[in-house]
Image (cartoon, rainbow, N blue to C red; front, side):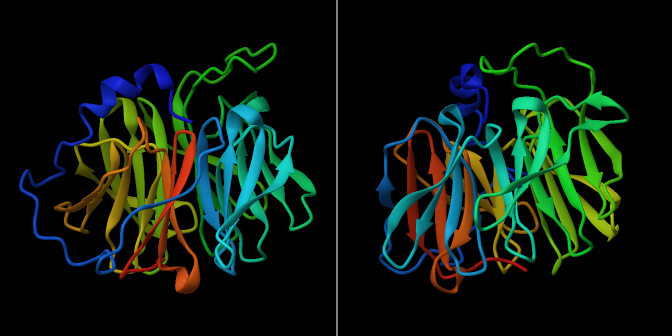
Length: 299
């Protein structure tokens, strides 16, 4: 969850363009006539949406330490799990286990369909992680994750042991490697199809893109845009969706092609779910929203 103290500061910056200052015409990514729809507004701060293999979207309410899921067939939200380790960002693995950044003790969890949790990661080289924030999984059983530092009032006896804010990779055997250091890394998303990984350095107001050269191997780091993001997703055309002041969409060249206004002070994260994974699911402050799209989830 993005530090609320900084929300107003970054909201004024998030309308900036990426590598091109001129927006290009939207490529009709939103379904004709579709409008953003409120699903529920009963939460404290929603984050970490991820779709299972059926298109149902799971998301977190970190201040209340809960995970919920949206059933797209009924358009209803139900509670999935209480006591989540203060889960933030999430992602599903190929077996429909929910992998969570549970930052209460600086951990990453794996939660099965019955809500049974297993702790995957607690430290890096014997030192407590600051607080894993967001993650993306590859097809090698590996986890790319960001580890910024947002000290929570619910952390007990926290003592910072790692003073860098890093991007890490956890391989299928559990070994963690530090890949890069940022001012405050936050949103992350990748694509097996395009072999790209995007990482937001939110306090620096920048997003970077890497080529994925193998499991945990990143090359050709480039500045994608002068814009940070809390959470991100990609569509099947390679467009990147950045959050903060609503949802801003950029094509793969870093040109802004669309902006989705969201009636909340802060938009934290987005993903694709629903039928054919063609509904954009948006977590924003106390609420969750949907929007029908002409594009869908990338593989």
